Image 1 (cartoon, rainbow, N blue to C red):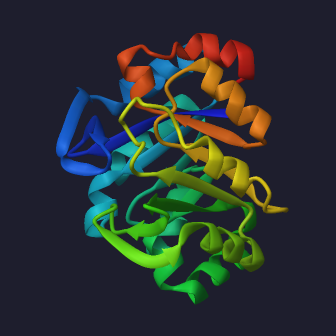
Image 2 (cartoon, rainbow, N blue to C red):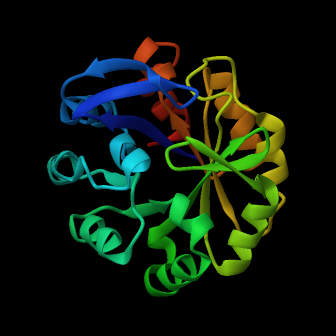
Length: 238
């Protein structure tokens, strides 16, 4: 199982939101690059970045910060937030991102998603953010009527190889992740599942691995010290 320490970027800072609420923000560092280097120093080889300004406004507001992290750490970086056309996909891939995450665009423009998967294959992932079982978009500010599990099945049928599934009610709450939904998602043959939201202990990581998830994203649990990244990397690898 791959561990993805997470850095959410807003106004150039490394922050965390509680359940996606932009008014419930905690700033952890004015230098996302320094945070990324700290993760790398303890053995992490993968990194999950989110441009929160981009997710909400549809612009690549923190592109320079993301590019700097990619260039200076050499980590495998997956990036999401505001990536809603091919030029933005290309900008991140040309900057060295290992994987680009489509969110709102994947739901609202299936033809675009299919085209990106055809052109870029496994370099395209889809972020499926669920509120009460339905797909949320636009930085979690809107909730659709699309069932999140059914959406993941459709993504697999479209050729998507990886989904990053977040239960918004769990995100940043440090109350545990939604293990049952990941067990259900892992039954979808041919779809790699990355778990995100609420993971707060190493035993929980073990449960996710046993369920069959491909990767796990660690956010607030790292910043609060609930999970020691070095210990987690030692057990699960980078």
